[in-house]
Length: 77
Image (cartoon, rainbow, N blue to C red; front, side, top):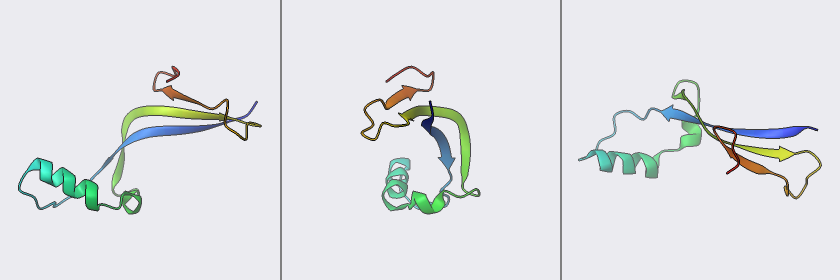
């Protein structure tokens, strides 16, 4: 049997020089205005040494009826 495994690692993305009046405002500004797809290059990301979860699809399952989500300890969610 063959599987497609999607791994959801946590990454740290550095967004520097955010002008704001508070930490909360800085987070909101980054969340609302940052194109994370553009930032996902080797200079701006760093693997956080942690996996959030996995998603596994089985071959010959076009409707994804046997697909399953797992936590980082490989237990079904």
